[in-house]
Length: 124
Length: 504
Image 1: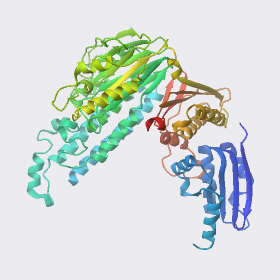
Image 2 (image 1 turned 180 degrees about the vertical axis):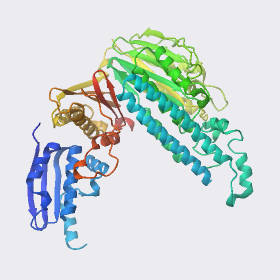
Image 3 (image 1 turned 120 degrees about the vertical axis):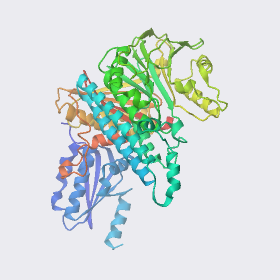
Image 4 (image 1 turned 90 degrees about the vertical axis):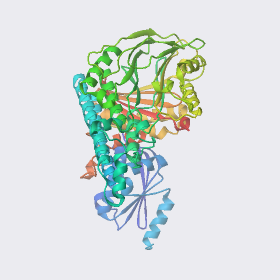
């Protein structure tokens, strides 16, 4: 088996977690993503928002997209919202094809996602 | 009108029945032993025959019934004189022939819209008739087809066999509309299954003829099916051709008068005992082989004058050596349209070119190959190599991301499902490309898988099921055309991508 080519950088913010992914998002990435936290227990400390920044992800295959959906579906059960930002137009197209957009909201960058989170927090 | 709509829905249901049967048959052609595949093809054709007749009769019967309600007796009178006063079978033959059944815009004579159903049928035909711009060795096959009605009866195909032989087909089914929508995919399926059973084009036509005669294709289609089939040895430049009632093809050498090959026999489906004659010739470098349907030469001008063989041969004689086949065909077809005539028949051209020995021309064919061991993640290696190649060679196509995603998914499927992640087995990736089209083949050593069985039927029951079948869904969405085939070398997924740059 080839090693995962994914690197993760986790940055907590007041109401959630921002995770920047770098490299390839595929079947082999699952172990690394699962090692970040115990997803079934939620984001911890009452955090309700998860931002996944894919700006530095070069390659996503169907296994990687399935992984994203599982994270987002877990979020629904554990009461956190998932935002994906930085995905290229091609991968945004693929996300819509496989139904990922039923579970996540797509934004161009961290800033736009954070603005939306602020609006949600303020009840807008 | 409501009844007519129901009739149209019945026709659509019949079409979907054919689609289901056709898909099953196509898969059978890819996965089953040859005899079983041929039997499946016959079954699909029989289903097509029954379904087409039933669909046509269903629509016609509803048209014939007196209409009630707001339109009153006046409508009854109009209805009786509408499509056909004859028996359902006879009316069924009329239905769908663009010239006879209406203005050719997808409407019934009474004005009932069938456009949606015909658009569906057209989409079916598009998916079954791949874009043809195929290169192998020194040979190139290009085809262009323009339909007179929304769904036409012309068919064409080109298939690579064993990486050394190209099988080409051009044919014509009498009738259009739903009739053609049923027959054309069934014939393509039959061709694709039979061509893999081996034998020359005459033998192939004989087998297809017996299948068609057996299901009464002549009475269904309102006549026999004309077909021309060529098997081209791309390395040797040798062509074996046989025709069944199809207009005789031409050999064209730039600077010389075109030469018509002798080819005469009954169309398919007329007599089960008919035998077909084969013509064998070897291409001279630069020579072209031109197949066409009768709609090209019988195209009528505004005064009713036919385009004719003389004009057609003059176009071939004037065809410059450096003019690509696609440009020549477009010029010819465009020229016919400038005559201002209303089209009554489809027009299809297929050209085989042979360029061996011509300096510079072989450089037009570009090919890349990779082979990777079947280990999890091997698709990343291929994706990286392919990305570098596409950025260098095909960057302006607008298809780079689509191609990388599709090939990666196919490689992942091949390594996991085809080779079972057996590191001793490899996945072979072959890419052929020109300016307008790229064909990517991903081959494994396994027995193949059933794409239909792997298509997700709906929302998965558990999280673990997410992603299952997505690879094929993405391939289906992102390619212009794809097929799965199996031969003695293993199982192969073949994907076609048209350059957006060239298309524009």
